[in-house]
Picture (cartoon, rainbow, N blue to C red):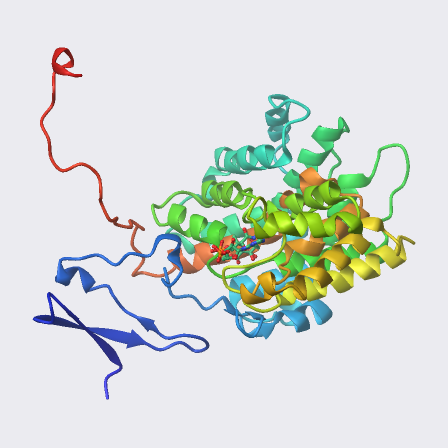
Length: 428
Ligand code: SDX
């Protein structure tokens, strides 16, 4: 029997059959592309119940708290994979063979430098400019330098642009930090792995040798894996919508960075640290929670549009946090203790239980990034660095689809009916 739903309207006098499209995992979808025949639009601000596309990249089960990149559970990738291998998986859909991985890593490594003239963009920023403001501007400016890979319909151009973005985004991210700190930019080192090289570009100085701590490198590499993709979140949807107009990949990624900056999205990790600073100590938690319940403020790092169970990334992030703090002898870090106390209280409180509010990926990430020496203002930059591969994978999946159309939502108009112009001398 054909899988469909029948919608009746006009007091039951009319009906329309809408096909139901099956999913590999998760909910099927009602195909409403012919819905305008009814003379009506559907209405779903915030897309709470609307699929904007078909995708094969990432699957989230919000009720079970599951996250798969190309079918592989995030827990297994966090334990056994590394960030560049996860990038390959997200882009190409399969784990690389040994040779494929070596080739991918070599090409990325060889393209981490940016055009030296890009350093001049930073001179235009105040030293205290927010690093995300610099990230948006400089990433978008990549399209001014790499005009040989802007034909989005040419698969080779798309391949080159993908490599350039994955290779150069850590370099740009580190440059934002160095400029903020008044430090000279550090060139990439090809003898280091991707994440170790990022820490080198962030923290090494010309005055003495710098070898990143391998435990901290592994921890940050895992954090990058956790943030790499998350299906159709706000910033990925921004990249898709920008890309649907045919905008070049660098401009689309800059749009994604701008969207990620918001405190309800990627800016939440920065907001969590500010929240912990405001609360100060466990004694102040009850008063803070009262403020949450009377909606004066939110418990940042909690809640999620999709996860109505523990965000699987939050559990791994908490373990990583514990690992890093132990490695650095910071087991008694007061912020970590306060965060764990806050989490315990929230998870036992009916207000949060009723609303299915659990810690999300941002709740612990700020604490571990702080322990790694990364300042609060750089937290969302790290998120953007990691998510670039997710954004560009979705962009590539969309552009490669011959059926792709420009995204152009409709609306429910409740403004003024038609009316004639009134000359200013006749106005009230
Ligand atoms: C990310 O989409 C993704 O996948 C995003 C992300 C990714 O990897 O790309 O996972 C990354 O953005 C994680 C989320 C980071 N944001 C925060 O931690 C900010 C705090 N969280 C919230 O702002 C909120 O939970 C959202 C934005 C994440 C989700 O909001 P929804 O789905 O629109 O839910 P809602 O605002 O309608 O909340 C439902 C209820 C409301 O209460 P009632 O009106 O029913 O009484 O839950 C309450 C909300 O007030 N609520 C919270 C809360 N989050 C929701 N109350 C207190 N603290 C919170 N954090």
